Image (cartoon, rainbow, N blue to C red):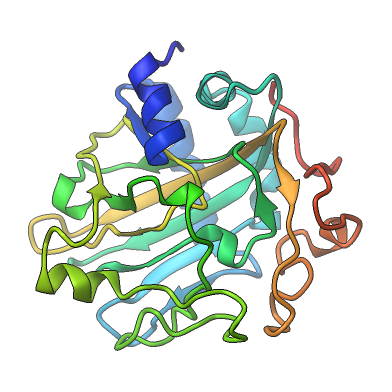
Length: 278
């Protein structure tokens, strides 16, 4: 699948773009079958963020029970070629999935954050393919702070405080605290330059995971959002050590910890556990 020069510019400069009709009916059905299997068979990193609040969301990451299914699935999807073009990378590797379930119209906005706050990633050749299986209006879609992937690296969010989405993950003073973007926007809708896209089933949003991103709430008009995120990396992707103050994420994080323990700061991000797709 050929991406346009404008889509490439959007990804490289803004940190986000959308490819319309990226997945055909059979590919989308295969993705949804894998999504529903994953939800029914959660892995060790499954959790419900902000349980008991209006922001509660079912999230699962890198489920080892579904790795074989996903490794096979990504070989049938067009993402390797798309990321080759968006990055300008010769090679592409598949990292893992992330699953989001918001239902019943009562799960609010996801806190703004960067995935790199709790994943040991650096470099331009990282990308998330964001696949939603319902029609998602722009008001309910994922939002990215334009150009933020190349800007400040912030501390993460604990995702445990519904009253303060900026509560620091590491809290050691090394990384600046996340700005309270929702509060800023409530005071001034033009305070942050956000990019988001209305999507239909088959459309795929591509974003750099270092982008500051969030939002994607459900409501009475859009009560359900089922999303499968597939994560990839390319030639210029490197290992970055995380702060040591949070034992859960220190040194390498919880995902693929054994493999990450073999890498040092600045090493090319490579391991045989990650399937090469291009």
